[in-house]
Image 1 (tube, rainbow, N blue to C red):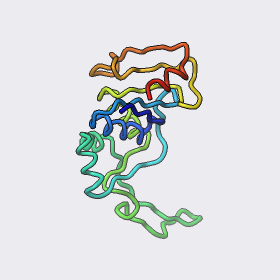
Image 2: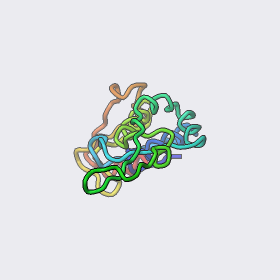
Image 3: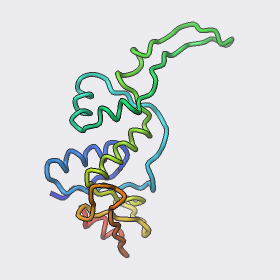
Amino acid sequence: MKVLISGASIAGPAVAYWLSRQGHDVTVVEQAAEVRAGRQAVDFKGTTHRLVLERMGLWDEIQAIRTAAVDQHIVDASNRVKAVIPHEFTGGDVEVLRGDLGRLMYDRTAASRRAIVAGASPRRPRPSSTVYSASACTSTSSSVRSVRSSQPEKSARSEA
């Protein structure tokens, strides 16, 4: 089955990974021209999260980009500590920055021969969009052959 996924941050590549493993022809479209950096933290906690990350082959990479565990300090107007909330209470077993996780998921998708359409969306394709055909992908993202279309809207829909 052909599947079109909108969004190449975290969830889109994750869904593409699992659907592609099941033999589906997946195309991921992303409006942003590049992976967004920074932002909030994402926490993974418990055996279910770890099992999924291990099955995707991401556990070691998640460990490498994890943030430091930090307790939260509640202070008064004079900056005196009034309470401490332990990081075990507020965070997960592993915490990573959303931008780092997005980059990891994006790279994993490209390395696993999943298609990415950068700078387009299914509703608002841009004429300058680059379409990466799943059939043109090779084992590394740097050797992906780009295909340009004079009708990006038709091209984006034809991949679905």
